[in-house]
Length: 295
Image 1 (cartoon, rainbow, N blue to C red):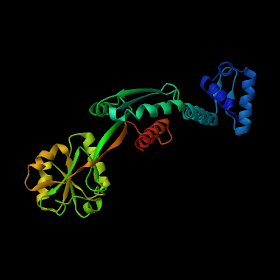
Image 2: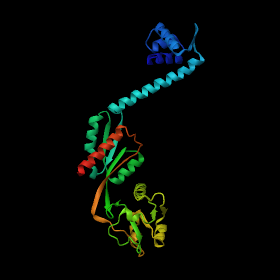
Image 3: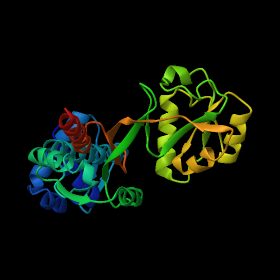
Image 4: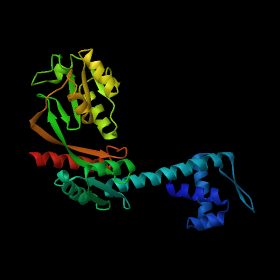
């Protein structure tokens, strides 16, 4: 059985006319007749009931018609995927937004990518970070690349500038200068809601890194501050609450070591990425370029 036979049978099944189906598939009527007969012999069922006026499909023919259509659709989809895998999408366009601090990474990565996927069009936009967040949420850009400042609280805790850790002034960690994740593991944690979607994502990622996601208590800043004063909990919140915490005599911000602050590249995309896709390849190139630029 050949794909050409399936194409010929589908044409006959749709048009229900031998001459028209033969013209559509660019063969003679007699050749089409032989092709259908060969197909019937291979299947072992009569697929077509012939008459002088029209063509009718048997019950088996109707079932086989659906199979043939699906098989041909799968064939076209497979051809498309193979082409995209080897050449990229001919009409695809990727819009990448990045901040000034990522400007040494993105153009180089895109140049390497285009050498492998010349059919993909790339538009690069240099933007402020706030504008990148807005455009990514609206779907106006496909990939966002920015550099996020991270501050150290001890040897193995690194928080974005937008987040703070705080405790009650009588907490055992209150005046400790070097705090590790192991120290935090001994105490329950509160988290405060953030108004910004991006900051809330940072909060969630920080909580996960502390292995607190299954036990954390979440509330408003008032609830969190009140809870700290009555317990040995630690708390994490957006920096927008730093003034409220600092002005409360019963609470204390954990000190960050600005001297060993470092930058971390943050790459985001607005769609689910298949790990074998060319978009995934571009994301990998960006990460590798970023790593090599810091070495």
